[in-house]
Image (cartoon, rainbow, N blue to C red; front, side, top):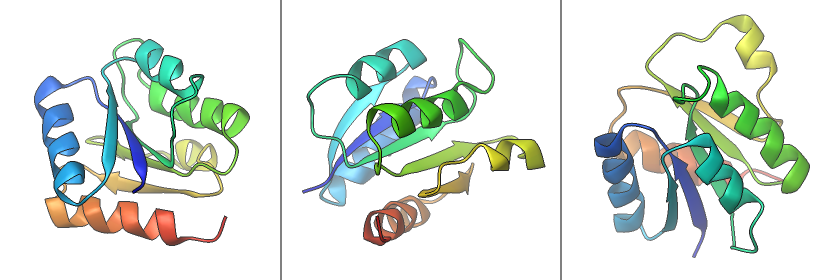
Length: 123
C-alpha cells in the first residue's frame, strides 16, 4: 500500500483529500504547514508520493519549495501539486521531473487518477 503525504493549509480540504485517498486504499500522512511537512519528509516514515497545495500560509509558493525539498531528501518520490490559482510559466519550470498539477477544484476521481498515474510512472 502506497503512503501519501497530504499537505494542505485549509483543514476541510485536508480532511477531504485524506479521506478520498484512504477510501482508495492509500495510507496517508497529513501536514497543515510547510514545517509539519518538512518534519515528515525528513523522518523515517515510508513516503511514496507528496500531494501538496502550492500556496501555504508561510509562503505563497511553499508547495514549490516542498518539491525542491522532496527532490533533495527523497529522490524519486513524485509530487502532485494543486492550487486554486493559475500557474505561471515560471512555476511550471520548478516542478519535479516526476510531478503533475491538479487544479482546484478537483473531483475525488480526478485526485485518485492523478495519484495513480504518478505512482505508475517510471522512476
